[in-house]
Length: 171
Image (cartoon, rainbow, N blue to C red; front, side, top):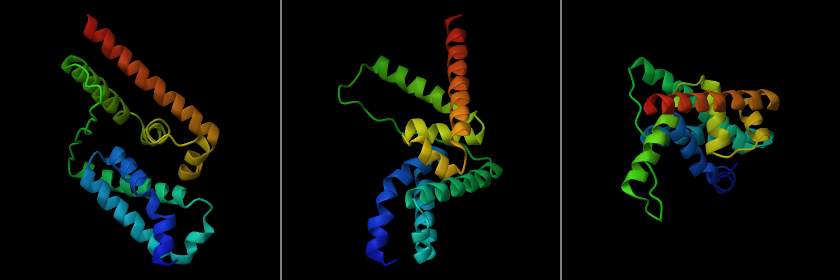
């Protein structure tokens, strides 16, 4: 595969890969490094890339695996997660509402980190990156029904966590 085709067929996923890696790592510089490594590995694959039905699924799978490796390395070094940057809305909500939204997002982010790794990846791919079940199945090499079950369990755990937190704060 030449550079022009690589840019046309692979490079177009850069932003999506960056978002996904950043969601998994919570560190923009690490996400950049991971995406560069993904592109390097895919470039080295050369013509083997043509054997894959979905180059996007392959790129996402490599990203997921590299992020998992990076997290394991960081955990062994007692890594502290950073919060995601929050987007400001064009209609500029009140400071109280903004604080409330950030607080809720922080609790959701925290709840997601408490899920098993597989459920974390599935909920991020489905609810944040908005992948279809078939795409997630291809990326994770899992059965679609298993993905649905894991997603349902993950959402229930998050819902239960937020309900428990809300009930605690009202007391």
